[in-house]
Image (cartoon, rainbow, N blue to C red):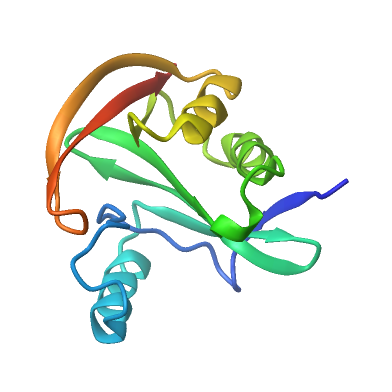
Length: 146
């Protein structure tokens, strides 16, 4: 069985800005580094590594957004379908004790919707917003954990 662990590199890291996996140039290293500097510099955000079998598999975190605390995670697509996101989120929820928590997921991302629901998140709404990376509006389902 593959196990996931949440860990930080040294100290606990916090972020404020939202992850944007659909940014216009995913290969722009300077923009990536600047984004993560802002993340690390904000004391209100938690950002942890997700490790599987001793290797980096992704990230998971929480951050303030418009008065809510939002949860975000990213898992290497080559590792999807192995329960890593579900295990990481379950472990993360023991670390992130603030409630309620919100999470947003694109309506077509059925795997991530299932991850949130298994962790006890309930769908409370939806929003449509423009995603730079795909060049169009995307419907996000909003979930909440009390």
